[in-house]
Length: 57
Image (cartoon, rainbow, N blue to C red; front, side, top):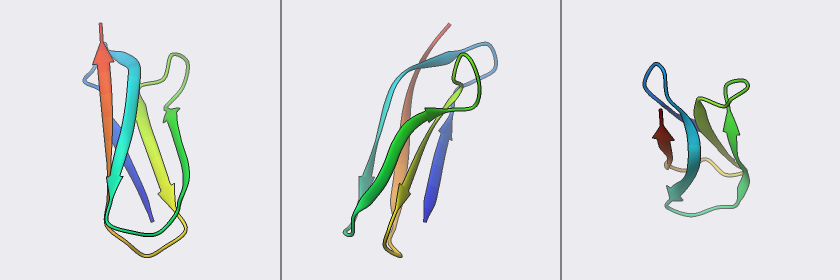
């Protein structure tokens, strides 16, 4: 499973994270270019995950 949270137009990532119900998180990283504009999380299990992103202009 993969989840991505995105910043609003004109903003870039200053941090991020995730929440999940169980399983193993494989990756949690800034995504979307340079500078990054989102936060992506992947898991090794079929579970519900939510990505969070902190953005700034």
